Image (tube, rainbow, N blue to C red):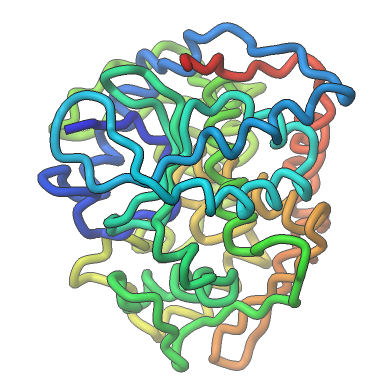
Length: 357
């Protein structure tokens, strides 16, 4: 079976990735084992020195990247089925509305898998066997035209007892309110920006340890290592597991998302959790509090969704409070991170993985 070195795809559920693949939580463990010790992305050389005049080459190749596939069941190259090309327009719309840095990532991809049967939503990474740079998306979320309101509300509710196996919104749990946009699918815009954030993170060593961290074999306790002082992680994190004391808060470690099982947080914690997140920490979202890599990917996704798609994003706790995430994005609490992302997107020396095909 084809396996992937994942970039902590924010959109997996607790269920099995594919037949015999194991749970998301286990995939997450294996990701750290691979990515933090010998990331294939970090081994690649910079991709093309693309300038504005030839960036359209990245857009023109999107249709050729589309690959409709059945579930992976054996080793070797996955066969593309007929009909994948019709999904290209979704990604062409993303390209047209992304900043230049994210547009260039399309030129790094070897394939975009449209998964006919898939229990998660999306993923990105390198295939374990042929080292292809892969973006994958569940076919049904494209066919059903899933939007950001529905998907983000569903994800936000998981830690408080929401259903992980169906995109349904519980009216008693936190809900995300967004403004309508017509230029691109807002759900896909956010999710793919997050996945591209992981690709850029590992290619450019955005998150680094102060010293070499022991390789983890996926069993026992994961090593805890201090973040390098000038890396993204050091802005909010002391180690890969522990935030700086000023950013930690009660019930943070209880946030479970796709791996809650039978132990979600009690609904009585909702008001305090969001007050601590928004008013006290420099994290942009609950998901960004899980570890430094999703901190960067989620922060980048909110940044581009606000500044390039001009999307609003308000959390209604359903307990008498509402929080404007895009307002926090430009607040003094988030200022250092906002400035970091601005500088990152303006860099002219970014490394892009080299496609193999």
